[in-house]
Amino acid sequence: MLERIKSTVSFIQDKTNSYPEVGIILGTGLGGLVKDIKIEHSLDYDSIPEFPVSTVDGHHGRLIFGELGGKKIVAMQGRFHFYEGYPMEMVTFPVRVMKYLGIKTLLVSNASGGVNPDYEIGDLMIINDHINLIPNPLIGKHTHEFGVRFPDMSEPYDHGLIKKAEELAKKQNIKVQVGCYVATTGPTFETPKEYQYFRIIGGDTVGMSTVPEVVVARQMGIPCFAISIITDLGVPGKIVEVTHEEVQKVASKAETKMTMIMKKLISQL
Image (cartoon, rainbow, N blue to C red; front, side):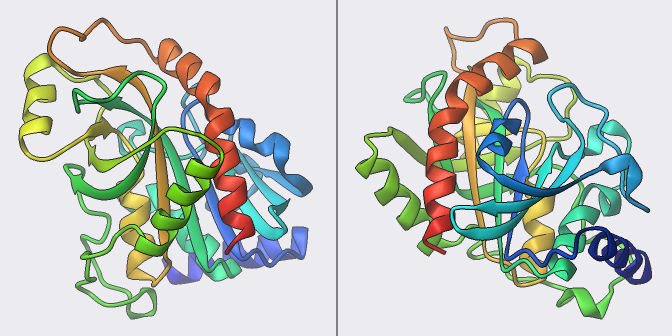
């Protein structure tokens, strides 16, 4: 795995000569942040050796290098999911590549279903903790260069970054929630009883991504910040039929607020 990562990094550096300090992963329907990036290089995933390819609508499949908020960044316009059939080492492969490209901070976005009855469709939720119901990406042979065998997860999402983001949102008069994200395998949306279960065990939202990337990033010592757009509700009395197209539509409407927070947060790193 390490040699494959180094080979991919070498290819990317030869193509871009970029050494980013911030990594960004853009979730379903949230690729619009790219419009605010001063793009220097763009590589399609299928042109990068060893890289997986996005198979889901709303995930464009490009690795973008440039400047945002005065910082050199690398952004994944489209991520990979366990439900696409990729093994966990491939779902998280790009995060390890970004680490070896030089990133010092990882920012992640996603679309999720709200199970907290106080949440509304279109709300933003800063993630302060998670519950992982997807196979752990660190299962398997351990590579010492990636970090310790048993990484601490007492602070998966950086408290300092969360505080800064809350302050930025307040200054911009943007309503934000702060809560716990439950990660499931998908690709089915949840049943009413599953929504109820996720709320009982401490979740505020539920989705199919983010946690594997954060686990791998934390193993490698990268501070993480993650934000979720609530695209549907798993609350009794508010549960309706959900489609992927509707999730994308709601996410795209709310992403302007998310983009503003992310951009200003990056400028303060």
